[in-house]
Image (cartoon, rainbow, N blue to C red; front, side, top):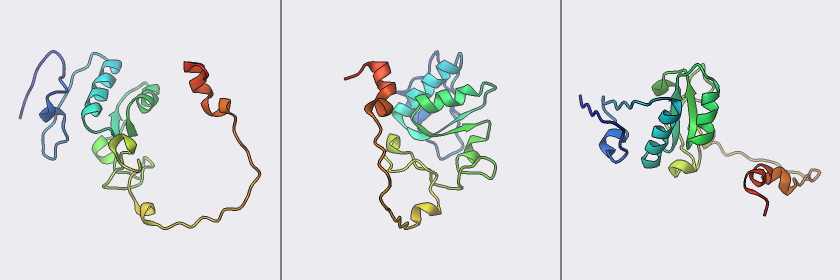
Length: 149
């Protein structure tokens, strides 16, 4: 076992934060949820962006916060992360041993890879009544936040 104690986690210690395919575990201490989310964000800036994050919390809104602020395709809530991320009968994710990480992780999809990714699907497209959204409908939130053109 390797123990590293210090006042703050250092992302530069790549051996500690990198993915491990061995029985080694890295633990970080955080003063609270916001600090923990910042630590995870720094780790994902180094490695793991797009994969998933696990959360055990009595505050349901924290899952939404993580989903909106971290570069992750899956937020695993109140489940054993190592099992749930690959799909389960009780979490709605398709079973997979290969999880796409989206453009965050330089992949072309962010799904749990499954049989649907190997299907050739033909779509028949016919004209429908046109509905063109306004710029406000598309970019309204951004305009409100950062100002219009």
